[in-house]
Image (cartoon, rainbow, N blue to C red; front, side):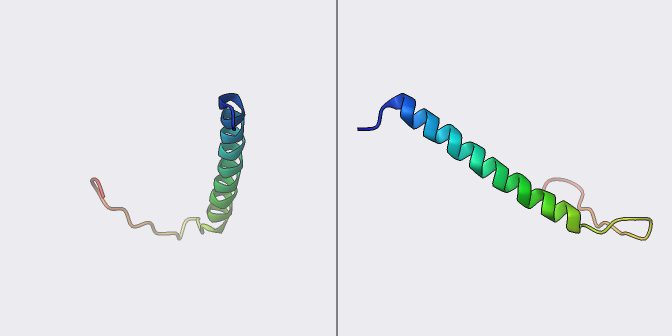
Length: 48
């Protein structure tokens, strides 16, 4: 049977793996964003 310390270690490792994947995806998306003086952003005011 899985002990609590083992489960906590697995959970921490899984959280780290997921965080790395999400950070990688975010970096890729940010790299694809076009910017500059001619860029236009549409912003909604208030809560979505």
